[in-house]
Image (cartoon, rainbow, N blue to C red; front, side, top):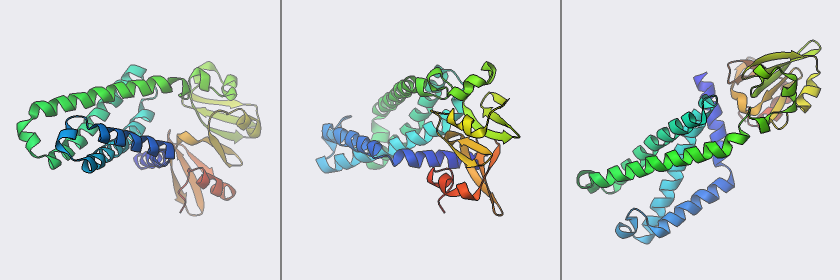
Length: 257
C-alpha cells in the first residue's frame, strides 16, 4: 500500500502544481520578495540574482510544503484540528528549514560559522510561519473536509449515523447497493444509478457496471493480466471495466500510458 499511497500523493501533487493559479501566485510572491529583499537579502544581493533567489526559494519550498501536506493530511483527517495543524506545521517547518538553511549555506558559507544567532532566528521564524499557515489552512478547509456537515452527500442520510463517514465506494450486490465509508459499510435497497445520483458533492466515477469510487479515495492501480484494478486507500480493490478505462484515465485515476 505504500507504493499506492505514493502514487496517490504524486497524482494529487501534479494536479495541484499544474493549476495555473498556483503558478501565478507562487511567481507573484517570489517577485514581491525579490523586489523587497527581506532578511537583508537586499543588502547582499544584486537585483536580478535576488529575484532569481527568491522565486526559486518560494517555488521550491511550495513544492516541499505541498508534498509534506498531501502526504500527512490523509493520514490525520480523523484527528482533532489542533493536532493536524500542529503536526503538519512542525513537519513543514523542519522540511523547509532544512532546505532553506542548506541553500543559504551553499550560497553564503560564512553564515554557518559566524552568524549562528541569525540562523537560529531564521529557523524559528520559518517554523512559526509554517505553524500559522497550517492552522489557517486547516481552519479554512474544515467546512469543506469530507464528512463534515456541509459536505455530506444525500446518500449518507440513508446510512446509520455511526457509519456516516467520507464516501469510499459503492458496489452492487443483487438488488442492493453496498455503501462503503471511512466509518463502515451499509447495504441499501437501492439501484446503483440512483445511489450515484445522491453522491454529490463528492467527486467520483463509475468504473464498472457494479462499482463506483470516490476519486480522493483512490491510492493507486494494478494490472492482473488483462484486468485492471483500482487500489483504494482502505486497501480494497475495485475492478475497472475495459469500457471505463478511458474515463478513469481522463479522471487521473489510472496512468495514461
